[in-house]
Length: 233
Image 1: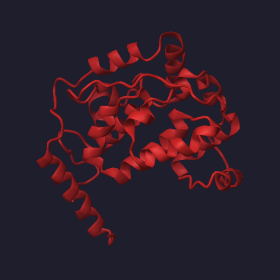
Image 2: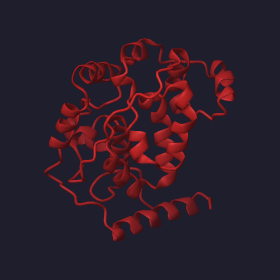
Image 3: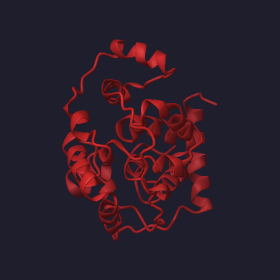
Image 4: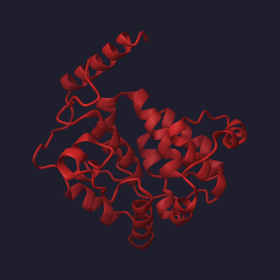
């Protein structure tokens, strides 16, 4: 069984999870596909559902469709949705308290038929508080092909980010400071410059090719082995 810190295809699982989260944020479909090959569908759905409320922030009228895209792992449709950063919500989102009482969220969760994991409580609370109704706002999907892991993904949420960069935040990190800064940039210049900077940060030291079928099979084997050891099916 691979440990939480054991590298998979050159990077620890934390790096691949960060790739998934930040690819959803930036609208990079291929980044999501590469993360899925390593993490598997179940882990991707968990991460993307949290990202629905932290980044995608759909209009109330579009929540069901957005969650359906997560269920189907429809990366193109999900990445085409403009995030809170490009719709002017970043400041208000970051001004809301990060500590929430989950009991206060139960009525809203029941209203929308949702199970909200603890890691997404504050994100869901912000979505409920701001209650966006600006349906139909889209952005262009980043269709850049995979050329390696961008260093912009390796922040304090990753082992690599701590070992190599001291846990520093990157311009794609999910801190309030970075959400605010990203909101300012996107509202001013769109996503093109941010995506160009992201792809320019490819990890040249450990540049990786796309995950091949043999590596993907190994990742699937490790996931099954981990489930067996936990007594899961």
